Amino acid sequence: MNMQTSMTLNRRVIIIAILFVFLFSLFYILQPIDQTPSFDNEDSTSRVSSRKNTICDKVDIGWLAGDRHYWDGWSDKAMFIKPDGTFTQGNVYINQGEEVCIVVLLGPIPASKKDDATHTGPKDSIVMFANGLNSTKVTVQLEQDLEHPSAYFAAVEFQHPDTYQLDAINEYRSYFWESPVSHSYHPNPFESQNKLVIRPTVTTTSDVIRINQTMEMCDLKNSTTELKGAWVDKLVYGSRHGRELFKAYENSEKMYTNQNKIFIPDTCILQYKSNGKGAQCLGKSTVHVFGDNNTRRNLKALKSRNSWCNLDQIRKIKNKKEREEKMKCGCNDDTEDTTEYPWVNDPYEPLQLTNAWDVDSKIYFYSIQQSIVNHQQEIRQSIKAFKSDPTIPRADIVIIGLGNKDIEAIQVSPTQFISSFYQFLKYLRKDIYPDQKIIIKTPQYFCCGTIDATSWNTGRSLAFTLGVRNLVRSLVQDKNMYLWDVHTLGTDETTCLVDDGSTYSKRNVINVENLLLWNLICED
Image (tube, rainbow, N blue to C red; front, side, top):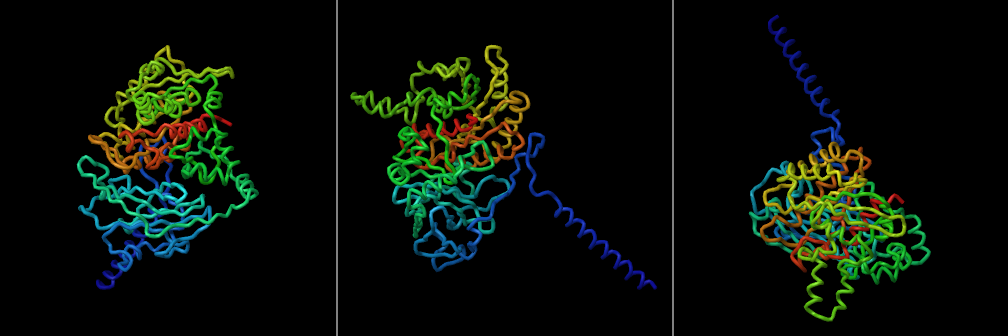
């Protein structure tokens, strides 16, 4: 009897344990996977994984990482993968408009393992471009493979016929990019051994017209999608798509050309907005701008048709010393005479846009040269005092161009910045500008090197930008907050690091950045 009772009790215990495990598992299965952050949710800085299925799903990255016949396991290697997901040492051929998978394999990690959960970006900082023989340049943003940390991949859609090679730089390993002042910069350049050949599918004028008629205009106000594109040779593109070039830039493409290249979006048409048209869109609006020196350069370029730092006109100056001095504005205007721009140093003196088309807008620029993480309370108080000043008109539009000083700061991590920036936006929307259109500018693209006594590098620039992008996208319920994504334009040719040692965009790239801004401001 005692034995039977004991067995019965054991059965009950086992049954109860099984039920407990079942209910416990069911509880986690039923938990919502995707929670949209909002200003009412304090945990809005958490990341949500929403990677879409891509052509890279066909690739056996584990096999590639473990193979020792084609890869020695020590050197860094980049490759184009065939459309069926298989590896080849030969060139890969796809049609215009199709995707290809790019895989990168890195050598052994030269440092102890760190907890990935405490970081916001990839373990390694890798810069990569697909460079075409016809000068086409595509920036490739790699994603770390979760099961093989030293392997990276990217599914990239190529819209421009050309023969491409991958050129990459392995800048930092093991999250050293997060605190570069503590680690020496030893970049390791490498390139793909095979090439990608894009076969044209649009060969006749009628094909071009048909394709462009089906392409929609770029909707930059939809922050859930990222504007992707390529910098293409202006003459090559014009010879194939002369009508489309005119439609995109209306014979003003010279103002938007950098290194003889123009920016062309991949899957949409960027609606051309001249500075005059942008001023019409503003009408009699008042704009409050809080930003750093990068934003200052954007505003200088808004005044009129290429009147500030007109490099073509400056090149005509005969006096060499004067010409060289004035040419500096193309990459650095920090020491420029601001007599013509009193609003640069006086936030109560507006930049005025006026013309005969009923345009009388005022843009107030409040310069902020501080880190949000280290000086948030001070920045908040300054903005509140400025907005409350009776001499300052109520804003219709607010532009925020911050974050670059946080990238530069030595003791600021991406995680700290994202959390602090969220709190800043929450304060701005709830307490200062509750119903105005707010435009958030991403941090600058940076490549390829470092700046002494700062934390600038490619990995930090990308991680901070991804934080801003994801934060603005998570606030989808705020229909009046937009993302001004200047980072997406970046390549090693658009930045001023090599030419001047600064973090600024080159002069004509600023015009492209402003074209994106006008598309956010204009309603038509």
